[in-house]
Length: 509
Image (cartoon, rainbow, N blue to C red; front, side, top):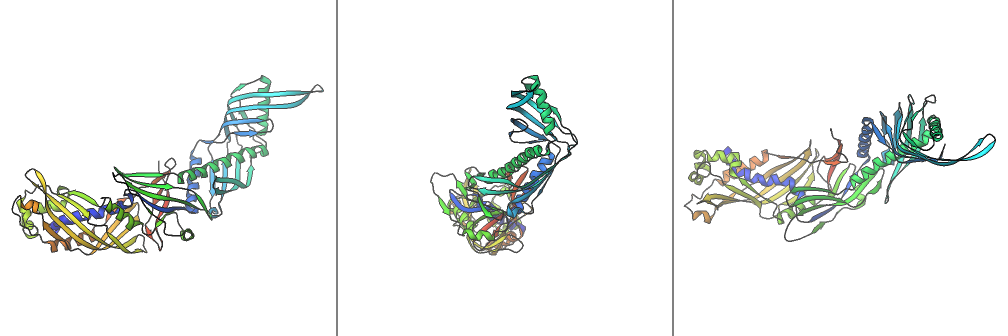
């Protein structure tokens, strides 16, 4: 009977709140770990490589050279197009292969300085010559240079941060390609300018010299890329669920867990603004060696996280919701059908069909979860017992007065899963005995017909809950400039832990 779903809709409000339970409370700290495995780090390299290919400029660090003169190069940028490839097959050993194809090499130098002393023989006389000068906006082009870099890099994660070094490095070029130099705006004697041009044109054909330049430049880029990953993983993340209610992930460290796996210990902090202050901590409850069994990237939290968070929410008044009857389609239909009112809820016949009621839905005490299991197809399931109460308010003489209280000791099962960016909760009540009690406050207003077909109502509510899963979008966690994000893929319940696996995804911009 469709009209009986009015009350069902209000009970569903509590179910609607369940997916948000992991993001509410006054100060609950849940200790845990974020695990990042090599397959996800491989995606990071893929994205980074695509970014270089699509860019027109690649910044290098400041460079210093001792030959052919002592020089320093600042604001150095390599100009594309580039061809870049990473070989991520051996990330478990913290090693990555790198290849760079640069067919038409072009390098700009914001400021080039030379400060050196050389010995020259002029007319049989040994002379000491001071080379002091500088050039701004210098440009070096090597048409058909066909520069190619190939090598392997290794890195380690230490308390001082990430350390990167070449395991091997190779460079090749077209030996017949000549460099074209635009010195830009230079300071110093004219003879020095000619000397600089000749020197740079010479070294642009010197494979050993260019190998040193590229070796440092590529190493700096890869180091910076991995360093940016490290910075992103150690950022505190805050989400404002609603005013006065926040969810935070606070990482404390980055640990090399071996075989290319990173462990970021930290805590999920759920906070609610309140005049009173309270703080609780849910310890890991699993030992660190057990993290060796975690074979995919994601959050690892204590097994009892879900029940504990729900308990904390209930104590902080978050397991409640006010619904307007005019927003509940099935209740509106009941109000428009006096024939159905007569069989289901006779006292409603005393109200105008457009009357708006309020339903306050809450839990009398924290729902109880037991027998949690992980489902083979993904997700998890708990047996659940939830003592629900719905307080209905009706208008009378210009104000709202308590009208009917509904209670139900709901028992059944709750399953939850994440799929295609949606978090879905499904309730399956095994029993739902609804009781009703008309409030004395409304009986003072007028005489009421204090009867509701609660047995029929209970069965309809149970059927409705079983047939109406609730789905919500799962927010992603953007990294860096937003070209990549971490997205929850599943919720899992293991022997000693609750896990939320994550996927690295490329965002379209």
